[in-house]
Amino acid sequence: MILDSFLYNLQFDAEKVSPPGWEVDWKDAPLSYKLYQDVPSFQLSLEVPLTLEKPEAPSMPDLFRLGHFLWYTFGLTNVSQSLDPFEPTLEPVQSFRRFVPSGGALYPNELYLYLKLDDLPVGVYHYDVAHHRLMLLREGNFDSYIARALGNRCTIPTCFATVIVTTMFWKNFFKYNNFSYRLQGLDAGVLIGQLLEMSKRFGFEAGVYFQFLDQAINHLLGLAEKEESTYAVIPLSVEPTSWLTPVNDGGSHFFASELCQEISSIQRKHHIRSQRVKEYPMLLKMNQASMMTSTESIRHYQLQEPLINKEKGFNLPIVNRLSYDLAAVCRNRFSPEMDYSLGRVSLSQLSTLLKETMDSFTYRNDLNHGIPQVTLYSCLYNVEDIPNGAYFYDSKLHELKLLQPGDHRTQLQYAMTMDNVNLQQIPICVHVVGDSAFYKKTFSYRGYRIQQMEAGMLVQRLLLTATALGMGGHPLLGFDAGSCDALYKLGVKRKTCLIQVPIGYYRNRPWLKGSLHS
Image (cartoon, rainbow, N blue to C red; front, top):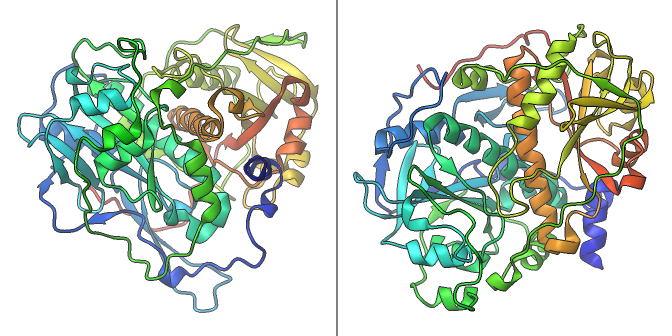
């Protein structure tokens, strides 16, 4: 019951999840990246391609090309310094940025890879973001081990890499306290979304596994589970691969405890900078409650029967899929705050934004055969040929369903808990909407973080598409979900607004900036 209340408050009453008077000790803040010490390293090339215009033909990558893939997925791309006007010392705050957004630019996630390339020892690696290199944690072939940890649903021997996305709890708990649990899933999602887009451009096939034996994967990586845990496993292949073979292998299931006994434990020294790490018992309770100990627990999400939409529909024009240079879009992606500038959006732009976002979101996963369960709702203002109002986007029919007419920008502004965005300057305010029970009936407490990751993946697609159309988007969690749910009449549909993303034009911010890539 405590965990249920915690998840409810994370969504609808965030002030209750963290203690009052929480103070952030910036002087003892952790690094936004993990640094391993005293393990073999393999440098990756920084001579990355400056354009990614078309998908490459499938081919086995070498270390050179793998480095390009990792840099565009999660590498350091620029450094920024800003001043807090409320800080009396006025010392600049320095942030290392990447191509994906992150709450407070804290990046709680880490990337690990099980690699089988000709120019590397076969084994398990950590992607050292700070130095753009691979750190060898464990050498050896672990095809069978990883396959069984996934329930034998993927032919790992045909995959040249298996990417493992983890979360380090302290990296953003130090600032956001228990609210960091919500952010960690969303941050993992935008990272996965970026990884999948890069996989398409580099000619890799990918599958996302949200269900696996947590303890077994953590044991393989040598993680301390009170500090860090795995959120997703993503095999990559350029060969024919069976992605979702039956879980049951000759009538047997696999157990995490048995797998862990097959390989020795490892403890690798690493550095996070913080001298004093505070306790985060609720995050550990949620993580423990979300773990799978046996492949017998693997489930498929039962797709909900869609409610019949009787609302008035507006047919959107048929548009072609967007063609753009993904590298340029990544460099140009910007999260405006008070920089939005109201401009008229054409019907073609809106149609392209919604259709491209949802069409490109389809991906291979182990939940429900790749059918997305998070959808797009939006409040529109000053859009060509579309009356102002709150809408649901029906991606199957490519229609907008009018739920409530009128200009809702003021109501949305009042629903925000922080006035860091002027919604009067926003023509499109998108809400990613999902199941209000967080998939709990099917996936228990693991369902919450799965849903947050799916929402994050959709947000990344939305941001990339908006950027390609010359607009910007700023993901926001500081809003009253109940008020927005009422606006869209979501209560009867058992759905809720998971994240809010204002989309629109913006002014150039007065700043000095430079890329980390010459």
